[in-house]
Length: 170
Image 1: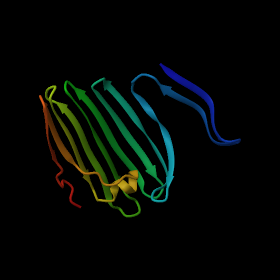
Image 2: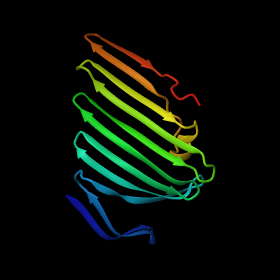
Image 3: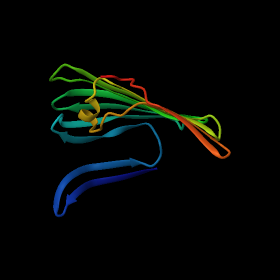
Image 4: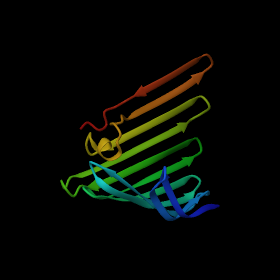
């Protein structure tokens, strides 16, 4: 149910670049702390991210995030995944009050897929961001649009509607 390694080293050629006294990888879903990860960027400086994974059932999981960025300060968030008959989705949140600017920056994202029948489905994505540069600054991603997509398949035809509203005009 788990893989446990000790004295783990990562080499580039003959040069050791990373070492861990132990590493655990679970092969089944269960509640657990998320192993800390470290990174560096010009924007945030050195950073560490960790959290807690909460497995309630095959149809509901949550991940609590906690991170610290050297230049920006503490950040937190929660990711929720859900699944039920005919539908599934996820909700992601992230919040930081930047210590250098005192600006509150955040993200809330909802993605949902729903099958109403074998021939009719819906896809939805909504993004709310504190500002247009948030995704690029914190996650290296471009601004993503929101959409609602409904599709229906019939004998000899396909029909669909795509709506992309400006739900976060910044």
